[in-house]
Length: 171
Image 1 (cartoon, rainbow, N blue to C red):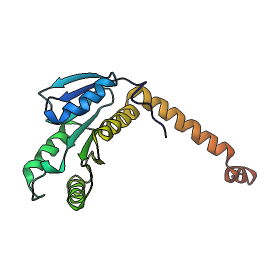
Image 2 (tube, rainbow, N blue to C red; image 1 turned 120 degrees about the horizontal axis):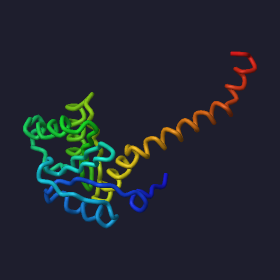
Image 3 (spheres, rainbow, N blue to C red; image 1 turned 180 degrees about the vertical axis):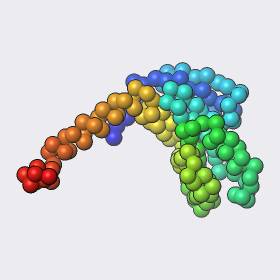
Image 4 (tube, helix red, strand yellow; image 1 turned 90 degrees about the horizontal axis):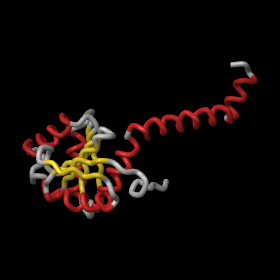
């Protein structure tokens, strides 16, 4: 599935003033998105107001040695409470045993919550993932996607041999 999120779709993004957001911010600016830096949002956070999504960028180094440490999970919990549609981007160049343990620990801790955990390898992956999700959930695109799904369902039903057989059987 080809995506041209970087070239045709532009949006406003509120980005934490933390240094961890500098590199993704440069890529987003180069793609001509509108960027607002903020000290009031959680450190390492990206908020897409038009789509109602928020992303928290973390690296395995930020996690304590003992994954049961509640202080770090409290930060994630605060993020989830503030943002109804939240994503945690766990960025690591390579996923070894520790990274998968962190991913699993976060998923288990926030199971049934509105937090989705996405493993990413590079800054380019971070930006691409955020833009794809934000674009798909932005208001004009949600309506368009819903229309396309409706058309696809209609087409499938109209051209389904099973549906034709059921009509012949008068079901």
